[in-house]
Each structure stands twice: as structure tokens, then as C-alpha cells.
Length: 145
Image (cartoon, rainbow, N blue to C red; front, side, top):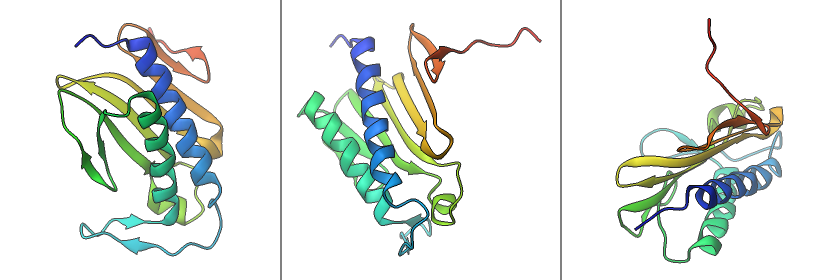
């Protein structure tokens, strides 16, 4: 199976944006924080973000395999989306600003494209294999120092 990295990157970006928008509805509001079996926190914002991300991914490919932090493995295959719908839940629940959804496409064990949004800081990061890495639309580069 050949992967279109440009399309994968666009889908990752749209999915991360959707997750960020969903989570922002709960930002700095009173939340019921539950503990998962592994003793990490989860909130309604995590679940809302995951639902928004899954909707975008399923619209792009209804049969895609997905591994999510909250729901686990959904389908299987050599290509799958990997999702953390709200990285930094503990900080989010405390009203902190460094949190956001992470979405990546893995193909045959290698990450092909990924996106991350930190909505409280209005930061968007994304990268695609062979396409470069970007922050808020500006290409990133390694320092010469």
C-alpha cells in the first residue's frame, strides 16, 4: 500500500484541530477527573477530543486502524493512526496551558505524518516524512549552533 504523505498530513492536522476545539469547550471549567486503571487522569475533555478526532479520521478513511489512549486499538493493519486526544490531562485539569491533542500516522512501524495543537498557546505543529516540519505554518529547521 502506498501512502500519500501530503493527504496524511492534512488529515492529521484536521484531526488535531478538531480535538483541540472539542477540548477547549472544557478548558478552565469545573471538571470531574477520574483515574484510569494505570492511575493516570481522564476527563470528559479527553473523551470529547477523542470523539472529534475519530470523526475526522473515519471521514477520511472509514476502515482505518486506530490506536487511541482512551479507547485502545480499533481495527488492525500495517497502517494505523495513533492518537493521544489530550496529552497533558493533568495540567489541563488544573487550568494549565501546555496540553493538546497528538495525532500521527504509522505505516509499517514508521511515523509518516503527525500533528499537535497546543490551543491555549495558539501553537500548531505538524510534520510529514519528506515534507518538513512546521510551527504555525512556518518551516522549522535545525539550528546551526
